[in-house]
Image (tube, one colour):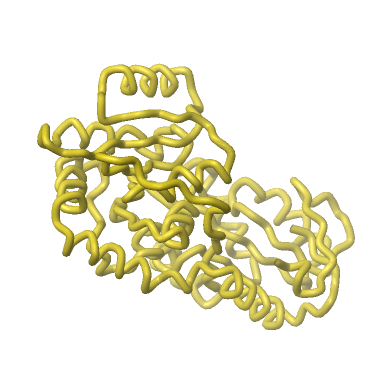
Length: 298
């Protein structure tokens, strides 16, 4: 997108004193060293830091390094507005929200007959609470047609073992493993619902992808999900609450009015995730920083 706006862009894993008119840093924690080097070499050139969920919510990185990156930045990009409330007040004037856009699936499959499929999309790791939907499915009435379809790579041997065991023991659960992004979108788009069960999120791309594909979402009430879906979204449930998730699944399957409410709420937010919306946000940000057709490192 930045190239589309007329800039020369070089994508690097780290900044190592290269010449640049400005830098966009992804991950305040993971790229803290790059922030320090760029600011030391170019104290007056624009520095933009994009914040992820792991920067703010997971304690994966040294909080002091994250804080330095955010303080050094001229602008802080958030993927949705709710995380601004979780930043120090002094940083909030630098915040700009840029929703990540998504494209619809290249092709679509028909919904599976006699099933109400719920996609869980994401690599199997603890922060995603990946088996919460599987556990909720065990609480459903025998007459329910709900099946949980999990798409994503297991990032540990324990996760692999549990996913295989759940698939073998739970007739409502199937783990499809690590499909390509395009194939993941195709499978997701045939489902009636997408479930996001994470313990924390910065701004999950799967929510944008689901909404653009026309698939309603149920999600945990965490900042990243609420910021993308809205405070009053009807499909939110407390983190780790298996029974609440089971109730939402049942309502989505059996109450047409509730399912329609989810669809309408998602439809109203679809324009936020269009590529032209994201492109316009980047254009405004770079103009604000007075970056013309100059060289940017990302």
